[in-house]
Length: 287
Image (cartoon, rainbow, N blue to C red):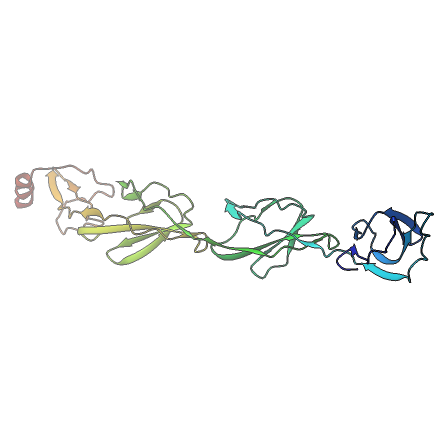
């Protein structure tokens, strides 16, 4: 008996054979006999040669032999193929015979799913090692080898600040999507603003170069590069003075308080700002 095939020596004058397996008779004409339908377990087998009842008689049954049918080893499931991540969805080809799938991301606990996809949710930027195993029933199918992929999520850099304008000393620009705040660099001095606008309190005359950068959350979004330079000119204003009768009229933002030691001359608390020609100014002062 080997590999499920029962073999015996032919008996002279035998017209056939009777094989007794666990008390059940099977008639055959000759050796061998393939025993591929036996249940799992131990079986007792005996054989006798059959005569033609004229010149030969049936033989006695042979000494019993014992044959064990072992349970088949579970079939190894195929490895999951075509593992991809689209957006936040992990998917792979379905494995025939799998009852479920085990997924592990880095060193996190395994997740068990019944279908061939899984929503990974929101993953922070970084490198993720994803392992998938098709699970068998452990009786007829064994777990597959693991399929492993590396999934890299990179932080996105914010867009560069664009579209600047300055109105009434207020610098404003287009809002940058996902920006947490903004940095404003004025001649090397850096200021912060939570909104896309900033008041320019610049009193010293001169030319100012201004740069703006959008600030990210340092996790999903990185800071933008600095904007192109914004040129802002602060011009010195000279006062113009005119005198009409006993009233003095001033023009110039540089003046905050004026005091003159002139008899019968009144300085208005809220002077009327009147633009005069510079020559008229000199004449007024000489008078």
